[in-house]
Image (cartoon, rainbow, N blue to C red):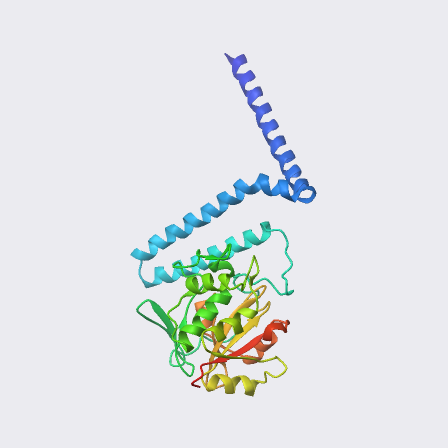
Amino acid sequence: MKKNRKSFKTVKNILLTLSLALICVGGVELAVCSYISPALYAQITAPVRAGLRQLAEVNEAVWAKLQTSAGHAAQEANRQLRETAVQLRNAWEAMQAPPETFPDGEEVQLMDGGAVEPPPRPQADYNTTTLTVRGDRAYLTGGAHEVAYFSQVDERWAEEPYGSDHIGGYGCGPTVMAMVTATLADADTDPAQMAEHCAEQGYWASKHGSYRTIVQGIAEEYGLMCTPLSPEDASQSTVIQHLSSGQLIVALVGPGHFTNSGHFILLRGVTLDGSILVADPASQERSLIAWDLSLILEELSPHRDSGGPLWVISSNFL
């Protein structure tokens, strides 16, 4: 009996050793395969990526159910966790996707939470700006008029398609334009409807977000006036004058406080001390901060074609 146990233990140790060796060899082979044959590597690892995506979807679904039974504090925690889940999913997809060159040479517009910590500025006083909900729509106060606010990571449309991408990751462009048209043209729209329309009109750029032509194209389609404003002409007094008169300014920013890559935000108002109110489609928190205008101007995208990186938009009645 002891001899049999000893033999069994020996066989067990051999099997464990062989298993570990196979895992090590397999890992090395996968690493080499990723360089020599990316297509084969993608085929081999596809089930793993699919499993991770499915796990992320299950987690988001669980948190969505918790939201219906939790109070305000739990709902806020749920929203922050959902934003984090989307950021992690986007980071994973970006790591797995083959490198692409954006036709215009622009940064990828990927919702990623921002490259650096928010500036040392307090949240704007609630007498200055608030986020209020009426019906199924949220509004940001504090500018010359209320601005309809949409979040691209809202569970109602975060997983809805933008071309073959999803709004939660790559939909800052159509989400900002949904805010603009709902505010200035009283359009009955939301990010899902706007994303579908923008993709049909050719503004979607696969794995990169949106072409910059989205701003002027959608604005003019809804009967709004859209005037490009170059950074060279965007003095603090000029920007403040536009915002004080009720106009909105779409800004395309690069790496910094709003993103690690590229991101559309909306400049929506100015405070009495000259700080700027924004509507960030990726963050409610950043939408309730009064920002230093010089910081925003410093972080503008360096690209200048299609009128960017600033567009002044107004209705014909202003």
